Amino acid sequence: MAAESFDLVVIGAGPGGYVAAIRAAQLGLRTACVELEEKLGGTCLRIGCIPSKALLESSERFAEARDHLSHHGVKVGQVELDLPAMLKRKDKVVHALTSGVASLFKKHHITRVHGRGRLAGPGKVLVEGPDGARELRAKHVIVATGSVPASLRGVTLDGDRIGTSTEALAYPEVPGHLVVIGAGYIGLEMGSVWRRLGAKVTVLEYLDRILPGMDGELAGLAHKAFKKQGLEFRLGARVTGAKPEGGGCLVQVEGQEPIACDRVLVSVGRRPATDDLGLDTVGIAPDPRGRIPVDEAWRTTAEGVYAIGDVIAGPMLAHKAMEEGVACVERIVTGYGHVNYQAIPGIVYTHPEVASVGETEEELQEDGVPYKKGVYPYIANGRARALDDTDGMVKLLAHAETDRLLGAHIIGARAGDLIAELAVAIEFGASAEDVARACHAHPTLAETVKEAALAVLGRPLHI
Ligand code: NAD
Image 1 (cartoon, rainbow, N blue to C red):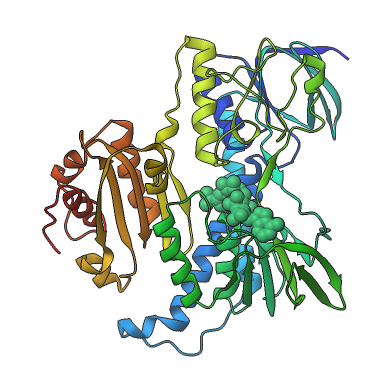
Image 2 (cartoon, helix red, strand yellow; image 1 turned 60 degrees about the vertical axis):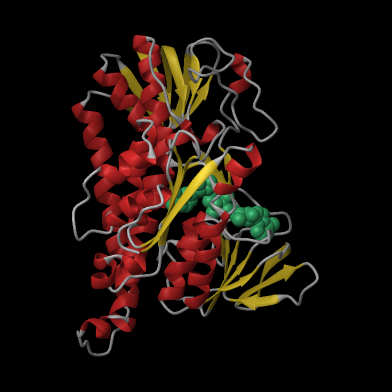
């Protein structure tokens, strides 16, 4: 087999890998990207962020038509669900975006290699794919293989009734009763989708709160909002087993009666996809959590091998992986490249949305950082009133002495869009006063951000 030579081979075409490949091509590297799946885009585009957002949007519209349009004086007849059409629309969105990545590869002359890539010694990647085996050689290799759902002891996934987000994105009918294990990003997003479509949803969470890692005050408000929507929560619930039984499933929770349900969604986190990658052939040893150790330039212990995204430490978020992909390639080519890990937003796309960037109040307290806090409720915002969407608040945290913005937390409609301004503010080292003095158009939800910044200074205008 003749080896093909490149400047860079990227293993994995998820958000980290495909973006790294594009940036490398822009910088003039002869680049190949190896991807196991037929569709490009990784978990995010195929079975993660994008299809879940498509279903969140559709299910929200359904619930709005059913429950809320009458508040606006809009009368609709009987609202009916056409689930196959909803799922088909989701598949179309996925198809458009994954094909879009393929077009970007063509545009940038990136060689797409279909198959499973494995390191096979320094500078060498072997690919086994539908068209046979290929040997790729490159001075630089970036590992961007992402993550897979974490499993739970006692719970055997059957790929049907007991599954992960992959199955929950395509249930052929609305489950009568869905049990969700884990009240994190996936559990709450997919739990919301099926609740809106009519399922009874019970969320079992091991901890005594939902959304661990998010600001505690916001997580508490989110918990209340979801309960109001009819999601049932059992906190402090340790799941010890789940199995198919009869036509449904039985879930065992320590110290409680077993729960009978129709489907189980296991969403207890994800683990790096670092198995069977040939890491040993270049002397890379993953840490005890399966992650690849890297330095500040995303270099592994092996010369010429880099790692980005979910396979390394940090939040498992598509946009974090994209930033790393760009910065890693820029480091390789130019010697410069940086990711500001303080300015990476996290968003839960439920309704209300929950969005966060920078430090939480708990983190500032733990670190003994003196801070000022400004909060502003959506209900005092004119646009939120006009939208009839007044549940929510913005909370900004700034250093008590310097006024530098340290953290921003929003729960409410379009929180995921509003947080962008605050990520930019933190990136630029802005103070709360900088945000407060910037003109925000009226009437917009963004005015809640300005008012929260004014509240940090002790002088909100509209409350
Ligand atoms: P997560 O880490 O967000 O939440 C997992 C939850 O499961 C936690 O609350 C945890 O305490 C709980 N848990 C763990 N073991 C448990 C047990 N035995 N019984 C009951 N509860 C248990 O993980 P996820 O929701 O599976 O999402 C996986 C990853 O995907 C996350 O890292 C997230 O960043 C990413 N993701 C992001 C988005 C987004 O950006 N909107 C959406 C989906 C997924």
